[in-house]
Length: 296
Image (cartoon, rainbow, N blue to C red; front, side):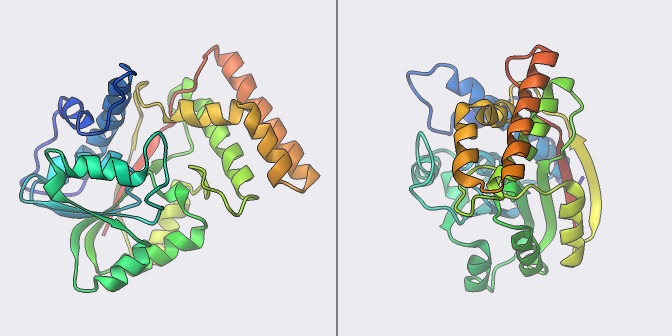
């Protein structure tokens, strides 16, 4: 997708290697399979973007480093990843951002990563002399508190990186078993729009078209885009759908939403998710399609 003469695709086997860089639960043998599924998906993203060894990468919204570890593997010993996240170091479970990042720092690719707990715009202002080959937004835009945050961030990044790389859910599902994830995401985003203090995974749902418009408004031009259809092993769809299925979702509606019409809408959206799962005869949803794009 992004041209690089020295690029060679990462092999699928790299996912198993990268998965072992993360903290693993010793009493949960299936945890390594979950990490491999996450890494396999991100290897596909790196191969779409054609990030070559030696690249300098700025990753926005790095979280616990799920994408960061794959980026560090891709750039090799001569490249570097600046990973920025505005979240609190003590945020996260079963381990915090700080714990997960510290563990990666002590591993094989740790010296290729610099972690920054900071608002990305503040970080850019405080490091005005730095620039990168790529700035990466990988499954982080839905965490933002408003569309204006994305637009401001993209405007601040213009001129600081050669290429903008984005991966976010496409709000469509090639696999029918992933359709519940689409509806569950809309339901969750609607609820969080009425919860100003939200720390949920989905706070501001943005479509590929909306992200492209924000990029264009900030001076970025779309070069290429494609759709990646996740494998069943990527469990994000199951997790998000499960949160909407949970009785706790109904409790949140009562606690966070004042408008009775919105309450009725959210309860109906939850019923729709349950109905889809029943119709499709699946116990857990697959993950919807992912939109992958490159801008200059």
